[in-house]
Amino acid sequence: MDAQLDLAPCGYFSISDSGVIQSVNQTLLTMLGYERSELMGRHIESTMSVTNKLFFHTYFYPYIQLYGRVDEMYFTFRTSDQQDVPVLLNGIRQTRDGESVVDCVVVVMRKRIEHEKDILNTKTKLQELYQATHEANKELERLHEEYEVKQQALIKVNDQLETMASTDLLTGLKNRRFFQLKMLESLEGFRTTRREFSLLVVDIDHFKSINDTYGHPVGDIVLGNLAGLLQSVSRSSDVVARYGGEEFVIILTDCTAEQALVTAERYRSQVASADWGAYNITVSIGAATVAEEDTDQSLFQKADMALYASKTGGRNRVTHAAGLIQS
Image 1 (tube, one colour):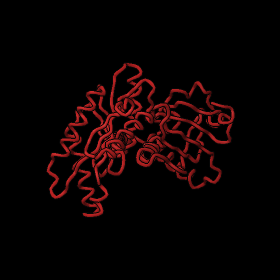
Image 2 (cartoon, rainbow, N blue to C red; image 1 turned 180 degrees about the vertical axis):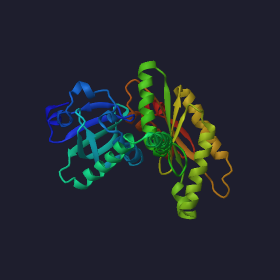
Image 3 (tube, one colour; image 1 turned 60 degrees about the horizontal axis):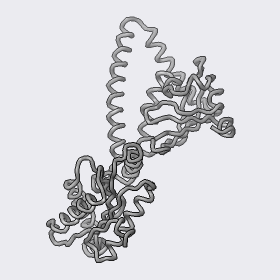
Image 4 (spheres, rainbow, N blue to C red; image 1 turned 45 degrees about the horizontal axis):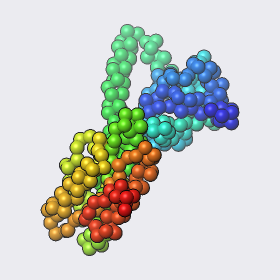
């Protein structure tokens, strides 16, 4: 971490999706009274009271999963000597080095009377419960059990939100974001284990005319039906995703250039021979197989160039990028 960020006039920390602290600047360490070695690798919730852990679970995680960011969240951290520090918390979820991280910035709040009252009332209620008689302790145990149930329900909701974040709502396939992550994973696997893979870019021929002639609702039905067909033809290890518009992408695991051509031709012929009712649906496909020098962008560009060759070559056909290089 450079000196400017380390000594910035606001606290900064970065956590994994599971909440483990990966980096923290000196400003936040000073704010909370910790040494760097005391926080690195620990869960961010270790700096929170029981009440604020629940608050963090209820608002921060669901918002970051659903929207990818949290803006101006009023929150309270706990210092090493158990003092509350109310802050304004901003967070954003992003990908670095192929892994999902959450970067957060905190600023100590000055106008916080109402917030402190709320925290104080909650703290007082908890203290009353812990200091009550045997019956009150029974009630507290019940509340803890209820909290565990709600926490499990929240985990389930978070899983559902994660699924929504990686799914194309129209077709039910994986979305572009998920595809890009899998491309990076596949490239990393190729470099470490030499597992070859190929990429197909599939585009519906003359799709605009379908929308113009029959309307977008019919176009959406065609997209959904094609998605189902592509998924049914694919192996469980393959990644089938909607890239955008009428364009689909398929990552073929353990697939050479020759196998990619055979597989792409199977997709093409299945679409051409399927019963589309009143519509004549065909697809053009561009294929590319990973090479040593490839990045995710260069591999996609090769497949996209091959798709363009299929389009300009008459549509309803398959082209592999290797054939373009050789010709």
